[in-house]
Length: 163
Image (tube, rainbow, N blue to C red):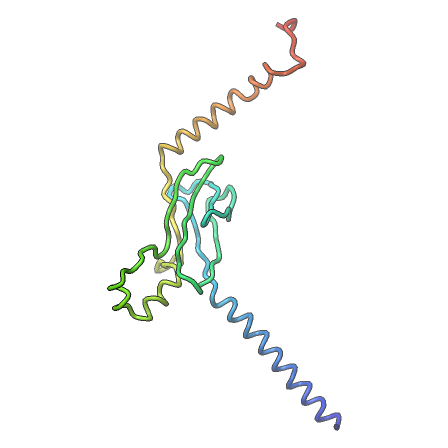
């Protein structure tokens, strides 16, 4: 085989492999949707999505989800292991048999992407229960105030002669 033909075949093989790689990267990123999670009071929380910790001690959390399946996320905001708010985000309504008969294929495709605002993109807002938050904050403050005193009283090096 001539060197010119060999170099042309090598160039064609390289281009084919390059386009295959670019296409696979393109399709893997096309089907990913970012969803921003915030609390309604803009405070910092640990955010759990479907029971898995996604962000820790932050006021805004961005998660990336695949658009191959239906958008259905259970989001919880917690602090110190106490769940302060939860939100069911996405499409949780299960259509009945009659509704299934009259659905378009487009309806199923729409439900694969999470609901998006006009300028904000996909954003889930978790409502925080103010009563539970106040109780957790009070318990935190009490532990902070009593922490040094309680540890001093329980210290094995303390003696009654210091009084």
